[in-house]
Length: 258
Image (cartoon, rainbow, N blue to C red; front, side):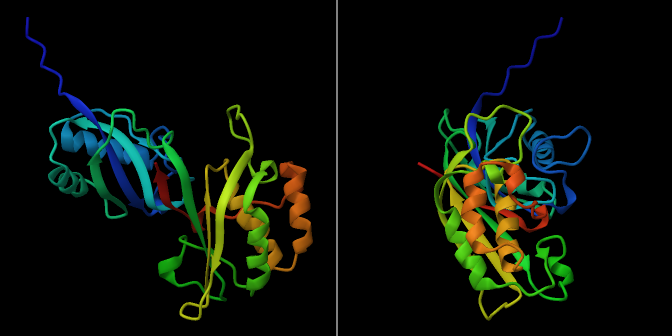
């Protein structure tokens, strides 16, 4: 009879991540398909010889990206954070970076502890899209009305029922009311083809960002009058709103905690 090996004491850690989502089927594990959660958990196993469930602050869609995703995970308690970061980074592919690794309190949960998130949506508004931006933006070749889109952004700021801009998930949600604290549209002469819409909220519904962006673009295209947006918002019915912007332009920019 052999003696069982003593278990490695574990502690809670916080990771900050950036990734190009083009090669992945979204964040959440999905069978044998390549996902961001699955790739990170495999790297953690290879690096630290532990099986740990990684909890992300949000489940980004297939083909979406991140500049500041946050995750919580159990790792060996005696790690040196700087050495552990370097070791884990060496096990990650070029399109998936671990930007920071630090100890966290035992109750820290990347999703449940978040007080707000900021998403950025990138649009390339020009006849031609550079190869480097392909599948990293929403390419719209027809010229958009920037000022009309800026005005459209203001409609969504504040606390609203966003039922018109949320796809029904496969679980019961308590409410479709959320607060968008800030929403901006960036566009300048340095890169005139690039339009970036940023929104920060206490939480987001399933595909809420992409659905709002689609409505704003329809205003920019002249296909939806600006005056109709408050009516669509007030309807609290997904059937009242236009479609969904593609995942290619979506980035999880940052996550805020107390």
